[in-house]
Length: 415
Image (cartoon, rainbow, N blue to C red):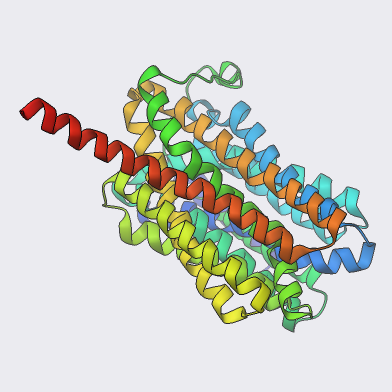
């Protein structure tokens, strides 16, 4: 069977209207979220190789990382609602094709500029796809789609870190092989999308949807203010691990380990994914505060492990912090969005993601600058961890004060 005959058969399948079953389509869309996020985190274990090859500073490394969330943010703002008008499938087909091409750009990169360009394109494709794939899963099955939307992003981040770490450590040419594997996955997913029926019909207004619409309803301002420390703390920690985590592990061990660098990202993200899955039925505010508390405890354990070079304790603390990341972020989102009217929720969620992605990128750049100036990754991580703990404990303290005030008010009214 030749490639031409395969394409011909696929075309006949589409012409006859034979599409994937709904369950298969749901799994396909979930796999796209996983692969897109895996591609974004796969660079984490590779930064050390690029740094050794091209001699750039930690600040440059964090800049390469940080352009990605900023590009995602821009795509969310301008193209986040595009699939509501063009349909889910056309947007996802285009984004998947761009991702596959971007893997080729990464594999051919000859310097920092190439990496930055590839990261920007990757972020734009991811941002355009996130809304479409999330909405598509909800279109297919509200309950299972909501669970998949909650779990797959962190699962993808975990998979990318582990995949790249294993390839860096044990196989040749990792700066080419990682991207070849991901490119093949995107091609297969593109074929799957080609034989998947769209989940909605096209609607007019595609050009108008490209205009950003940011509005924070009055009812959501108080809940968002309460959730703000948790949002900043969780995503700042995620940004640090993805940009400087492998360097931190190298600083603790004294030698480079691509596998352990990728494992750090994996443990943080996998723990978060598990927490979201287990705690998804908990009351949102309680889930958020539990996440903030676990985040503070986990980062505290990590900070203690650093000067003692206790790598096992470091990973244990990372696991606890990952639970805090998953529970804290999901609890924060679910504590804010329901206060908006249905037609306002997309805009509110966009604002939540603006805060999240800025928190992911900007503190990482600051940490990279600190390492570049002082040359001390352990000390940088200790200061960064102290800031994350302060934000998390602020959220826990605020929740305690609100709870105490509520009890006092009830007692006063009953009296």
